[in-house]
Image: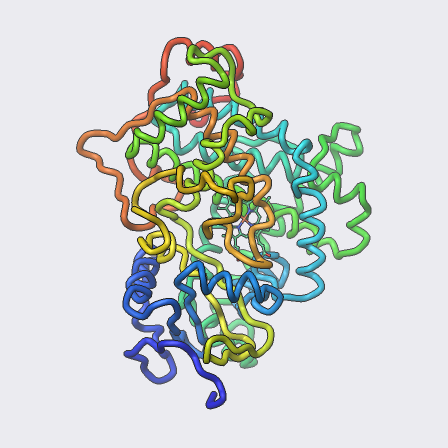
Length: 484
Ligand code: HEM
């Protein structure tokens, strides 16, 4: 590696493992650790994790220079024998290395879910957010389950054309598989991904316990998605299909271009990538509304001007041009106290930058928590303050923060995601008050827990009798139940 030069190596490396043994175990602690390292070492630093070099990008400037401006080079994912090959058999787009299959999948997703298709998924978001309100009204203490149901049912409708609730067996399995999957790609979380060469040693299959676990996760996901796929084809045969990702995919003949398992995983990947992210973002929103009532007041003023101060009607997607503050709040929701970790990019060709030389295969991490909490990047970063996004980029939901990642790997679901957030936020803030619960402070200053359990206490009450009546009138209460 003589001809290469990495920025700021973090001291304390040991042979073979590099910095791996210094990594905190818990993902939230890892994020705080990366932010601390950024404070000490500046815009870039390097960790050696097993046999891999990980360069951390700690400012919007270097993320922009490398992941955005040179996006065509910083476009792949690192070699992940466990998460990518064994658990996903190279079929989950999120782990796919740069190449034809990845390019093809991005193109198809864009074609079916991009901005031109808003009319297709808009009605799902409208229906599901009404159910969200009914859930809040009936079971205010289960707000977190209402978020889970909303998020999951939107992406399910959009992908397979059917609504779901939290008791749905397919949804339950997805949640379980996702839990395991998330664990598997934290930096340093499993030895095989830290030492990819181990995967190449021809041990007998039976001597590789990690393979059993990975294989069983793959099979569980495949069965789960396949049965949904078959059910849709059957509904279609009976002439009962709603326009959705899979029905469009079939109508456009895309299934002739790809094998069945890859097709099933493409659909499944959308659900995996779209549900938890939206759910956790709404959890962040609830915490922010309870902790910072000042922005809620300002958001209300705008909503009341458009929909009436006495619950005349619900906000809709068509109100967006008159609700700039809500659009800004949707961006701030994915910026503030971000709970999710980053997904690293990998370099496909040697590159030089400001005196450094990186070999192809280097892993690059956009330091999500570090950048979002850096006072040099955001004034008072700990404060939820939508005003910071009332600027020229307001209409570009992915700009000004890293909530959707960056560059060529930026979340391809952002159109759907930002519309789900916009509608969810505008309706919730219009109809409900959020407050902190005495003696149960919301634990900010570190990433929130992303599990399906309630991450913290938030008090929820309907704003007025008129708002409760509006919900009863316009949202079907029988759909609103999240838990018997
Ligand atoms: C608020 C909700 C969401 C958030 C915060 C979010 C965030 C992200 C982030 C941070 C990435 C990685 C970007 C990178 O590597 O630079 C990503 C990737 C991805 N997201 Fe989202 N996402 C959300 C919703 C969705 C939805 C609704 C869908 C599907 C319709 C979706 C589909 C995907 C896919 C397929 C990828 C992998 C892209 C690739 O590797 O090329 N996401 N998302």
